[in-house]
Length: 162
Picture (tube, rainbow, N blue to C red):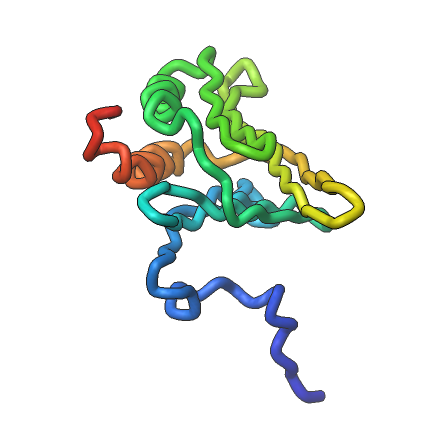
């Protein structure tokens, strides 16, 4: 039996393969490591955009031009969520992007819900696509996610938003 490399789409993302102007920021993984939501930063002419990729079992999607509309406010709410699970911080972006953290048990076990959309333009009209899913995340990673969300905010530091 010979081993073959998996198709390129299934290989792990290696930062060295990304263009120089793009850098991997963060990946939120499900507790069972089967699902994920990944953020890759990009900057186009001074405007900060995200490529967001989501994989929910057999379903997945990506959008390479999501603008995160409320990132500084979301980071403050997510910080509160870590100690107060009655909060439900929601990150909002273009193309119907939504990322929501919430507690789904009385004990406060955290879950994340994501809606990721995209629009493809065709001569016969635009076509909208989307993927939606949610999964449980490990509590011990919440502080790491907070740190990484703060790093996503770096473009906002210069104009005093956070």
